[in-house]
Length: 354
Image (cartoon, rainbow, N blue to C red):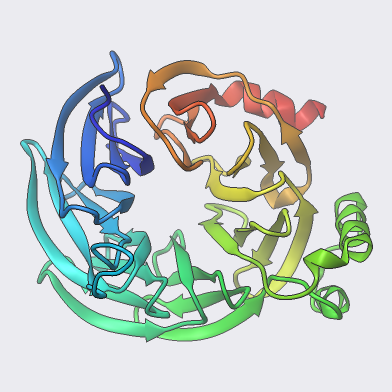
């Protein structure tokens, strides 16, 4: 039997020796040794809370876990979501704090001692001071904020608004929403993107534009804008448009769409390698991924990956992340119910040969 069911988000300790995994289906979080693969322990959270994402705070040797569920059941009353703080050694629950309604994505700014949590059903990003363990701000966003990403200098936060079809940029210091960028093309929006973009109409964009024009079903209303990642070196934010099957690159300074490319059928999770040379988008439905290079100069759209593993865990989603050593991409395999990893050197080979 697995120690958790339906692992969702996960994060590594700084030395890469251990990984902390959220068990969405079992309402707990587990700590694993990677070599050899072994469960160190689990921490139970509130029943039905649906743990979603994990971020490690190395300085405090803890992990923060978002909990997305907002009802005991479909007929039950609305209840606030919570963020949990779990100590890594010994592995135990330290504290929890109410974070809003329907908390999903979470990011941590060590220099500010702040957690930023996307409240999908509250249409805001909650800010929690981990030193006082208190909610210090709620920043209004677009509809359905889902995933958040922190800039490398920890001064800004990007958030996907899955129902508005936008990406919002938040001042992480002054706690203000700066602007929103439309990333969900519908009739007339292709021209808008071209007018507000410095990205030349290369093969990837032409392919995307052709698909949109020939499939009007994709152009009716804003689509589900899923995960987001802030590139460590090229100054861009990358987000996945789940329903339209596209990857969008936004210049974080000018707030302009710079790149648009067709990727896997239902892009969900995005990860960028620590050195910024490679990015990956996983498919939520198929055992496929797309690999892109810095600046999206090359996009391998539909890659069936070979895995090194498996590490047996049940899974319902396709979260992915590079390990600290930048040796492997780890994937929660939604089809085969496994936690797998792919060698970065194999991904790099794919990016240059397809």
